[in-house]
Structure formats: structure tokens, C-alpha cells
Length: 377
Image (cartoon, rainbow, N blue to C red; front, top):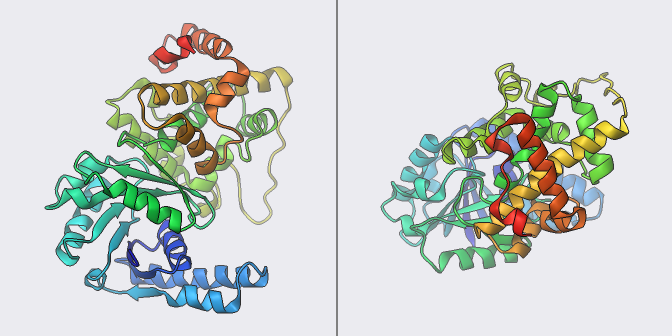
């Protein structure tokens, strides 16, 4: 697969284009908004120039990478592609319509893929004439830097295709894992409590966003706290993924979205990209210092980490991926300092279970139910 089509030239689309072009593929980049493509290609030129300045690539390599990316004004220009990856808005109906157009354009041998972070691959493929050639290829942002790629076959995907895509991602320098087609796949399913429980803590005035972030950085060695990370991802994007996972799990209370996050999204306080989210990113803004509290920090950390470990244990129980891939996914996909199964063993599964039981008794919510496997571990 040497001719790669990318639909969507936003942050993720241009990132995937850079990865594929760096690996030697010819990339056909299409976006319904041509101005967005021009803007993204200009941004890529600046990115490549910085890599040259830092001597990470040569000037010749920079020119070759950029030269392999073809600006397409019509979707029909993707007709000779071996693989087309969609990287547009997280909306099932819009994606499905795009895939219909792609199928009318490309040959029967072309593989069609979605970079969706949470929408069912099976549901996206169901309307296609040839659903067997459809698969999920989920990169993480920023795509050129994050090594993990989730490869997700749907129920109708040809059996040999996941391994072919796995091998292709390896050749692109990525660390792929094959995951089941469940809501959120591996990372976005297991990671939901990192945001959801943090939001609950702040909603209840137990702690401030800066205290929660500080607790997770200092006690858990996370590179970023939940609120810093939501601001980076985009509060609207994070909220959209949460709503999708919640609905697709038939409104399981474990994945219930946050009213605070909804209000932030409604106010268009989306984080870094809008200049303000849980933190202020304006030019002269000063980040507030957290009021440190050892006991509070310990409570915050155990509450969030116990929910995360429980989610990883449940994923293990359901066979969503191998133990090794579950650990790799969280370390390489969201930069967790260690795998959650290993973390559970280190803290003690009994202690994790006791924490969840206390939360359940306090709130009387199914949100805090334990995986049936947790007590066995």
C-alpha cells in the first residue's frame, strides 16, 4: 500500500499525512474545505523546517516528505489509492456519507479506514457495498509523535486485513495493537475515568482543577493532569467521545458524561485552541498555584487510579486485547507512566477494591461497581 488517501486536513489528518509521507508513501490529501488544506500544508512546512533546524531530518528529506503530499481539491483524485483513511469530525452520519462517496471513487481493492476514536467500526461499514475492506486505524494526537495505533476490525472486516494493516503500521514506524470493536476501543474506554472522576471531584467542590492535576502529577507521575490534558485535547472533543461511549454502552453509569464539561463545551471554552478552558491561555495569564493538601491529594489519586485499574481489569476480563497490548496501549497511547494492570498489582488489588467499595457505599451508584475479575485478582 504505497498510495494513501487522507480525508480531512485538520490536526489529525495532516499528522497522518506526515507519517505516511515520511515512510515513503505518496499521500493524496483531501478536505471539503480547501482553505483548511492550504493552512495545514503551510503548518507542515513550518514543522518540517523546525525538524531541519534541530538536525532531526535533512533539508533533502524535508523536501521529499512535503513533495510526496498531493493537494486534492476533489475527492475523485483519490481514485488510484490503495488505502484511504478518513480523519474528519466525530459524527457517524457525516462519516458514513463520506464513505459512500469514497466507495464510488476508489477501486474494489482499495482498503477504506476510519481514524474514529470511539464510533463502532461495524456500524460505519454496514452501509458499504463491500464492508469486508473496511477497518479502523486509530492514531493518537499528535500522530507524528505518538507511537500507538489501534487497529480495529469490525464484524464484517476480512480476516486477513487486520494483520496487513498491522504490518503496514509497523513499516510506518508505529506500535500497532489489534483491538475489539467495542465503544472507545482500548484507550478511550479505559481512560474515561481519568477525566470523568476528575470532573466529578471538581463538580462536588472536593478539589480544584489545579489540585487534581497536581495530585496526579506528583503522586502518579502523570505527565499531565486530567484538566490540563482535556484542555490540550479539546474539551469539546473529549466531551463528544464521552457521549459516544456512554450511549454505545447503553447508558452505563460508569461512562456518564459531566454536566460541567457540557457547560464548558456550550460556552466554547474548549481549551488551548480557544485560548481558555479549565485554564487561561491568554498571553499574560498566570496559571493558579494549587493549595497543597497531602491527605486530599492521596484521596484524589486513589479515587482516580482505582477507577482506571478497575476499567483495565474489566477490559482484560472481556478479552478486548491481550494483557501486553492493554498495558502498551495506555503507556504509548496516552503516556501513562506504567501499565494499569501492573499498577494494580503494585498498589494491591485488595486496596483498589476497598476504595471502590467505599465509593459505592458513599454514592450508591453503579458507577463504582467492581469488575467481577477484580476480587479474583
